Length: 298
Image (cartoon, rainbow, N blue to C red; front, side, top):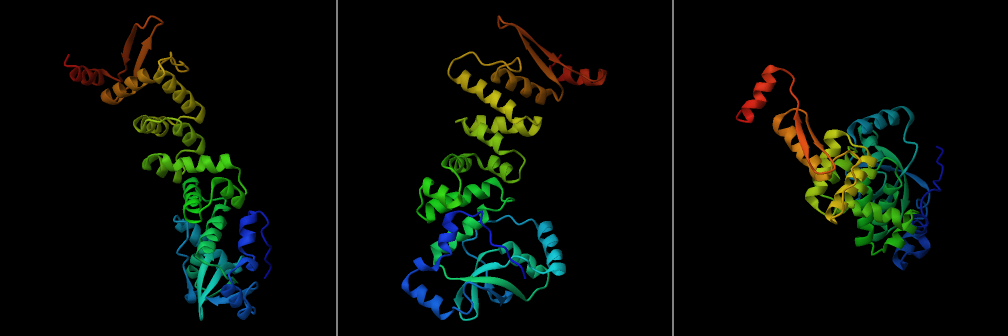
């Protein structure tokens, strides 16, 4: 079995895997179990308990089954990492996706690195291992960052060093957690991008955030367009003349959209420089026109 050591992880993970800083009791345990620690061992899957500090909550069933099929054919290439929690008992540090897929593949044993770690080290190793994954969604990354700050007593600068990211990147992820749950769920499901999210974060009013969010979903707005709308909104709030990139201020766009929803047809507002304007209501047929006229009590 060939295993290549990853070098892209931050200094924090390598330090955590260094047993030299462990308490005396743990160092003694390392000595007693030197036959398995630091090397790849084969452990029974039934003896491995799931990591209670696992930060990842979203496992794609289809992707798990694909990995399981690959394991059936090729075996598990990358070992999981565990700590020994008792005689013939292990606790998972990292690799829950591989563990789940191995169970689906029908394996009874799995290759594993056996480490020693206390609870805080378990949490930190699991968080860092997951943060380094490319397919981890932005909300999971943000939650992992927040847990490292809260439960590992880290400052943002220290967290950045642990995960090899600058402080501004860490801050941008943490700010996602201030958005309403509906927007966080959309980021998690990759319906909107981090660029959209950063634009929404700069809007302080939650109702306006949700309105802009619905505009993104309903109209498929680009990040640049959302940034323009946010600028209009902020300028309007300061009593300044809005930037009319689309010809209408934020308030008039909302009126236009509300009317379109009310009449279930295209509505267009037109304004001149003096503030005078008109409303155009589109219709598709005579029946459609009669429907609109009835709504207007014509």
